[in-house]
Amino acid sequence: MTTVTNTDVLSRVGNTSLVKLDSLSHNNTEYFAKLEGNNPFGSVKDRAAYWMIKDGEEKGILKKGKSIIIEPTSGNTGIALTGIANVLGYKVEIVIPEKVSNETKEIIRNLGAKVFETSDDLCPKVGAGTDQSIALATSIASSRPDTYYSPNQYANEANFRGHYEGTGPEIWKQTEGKVTHFFTGVGTGGTITGIGTFLKEKNPNVKIIGCQPQQNHLIQGWRNFEESAKPDLFLKREHVVDDWVSVDNDEAFSVVKEVFEKEKLLISPSSAAVYACMKKYPIEGDACVVGIFADDGRKFRSVYATQNVMTEEEFDNTLKEAKHMSELAY
Image 1 (cartoon, rainbow, N blue to C red):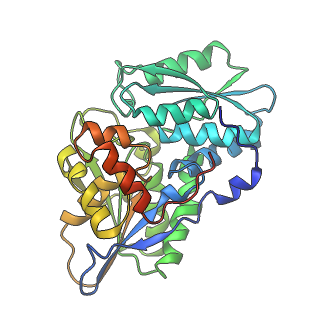
Image 2: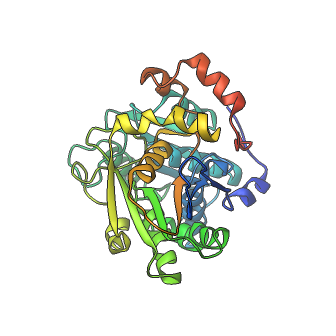
């Protein structure tokens, strides 16, 4: 078990790097990746987890020495919640689909969480009667309401605020207010609505583009709205999304090695999917395009081997050569 107790780790949440993608940039159209893998627990979900835990504390719902945090997740939220809770002294229980990468589940367990695995798809289907992850987490939480605290990332306004008050302003500052297009995948909807709302308040002409995977997809953390209901958090502000672009599994996995060869970035399947969407979406004239790379690829060694993206030996060599790989807290 890995115990993280240094509270200085929490000061590293946010303020992630924005790097230019030379492989996509041309003439006066510049493309950038917001590298959320630079967060201390390795993903964009560090932001939501931190904001939801602090919100629970401020409201008196989450109490040290008494409360247990429980949450259904497709991976990154589980890592982030467990890691941050570890720092703050809370116990965590995570309900996760068995299809999630073995590395992800191992990280969550090593950070100290009790893990329940279900046979769900990669992203729990909000509103679906067959969903097991959300149903199980809800059942456990309701059995001892005075003990369990479920942040419920799918409806928690603190998830939205983490991006409205954090990620959005960072992107605006890092691009010097020049951002014209913004791309991200959608899971809970907190990232796209939080950042999208902020950017449109600064400039209503900024185009917010959602990336959506195929049905029965293999993109951990993403949601296809034809097979899953839209989360409440997203429904409140879905009007901020100007356009959608679809990406299938092959398109996403096929660019993983391309991005490494051209940019020296080892990226996750979801980051690869965003790159693929940015690459094929038509943008003409002067533009400043930003995409969220939700996490890096270091916990997808087994997935990339299974999907024939690269062998485990190739992965290890790629990891050694990759740039912008920050030191994780665990």
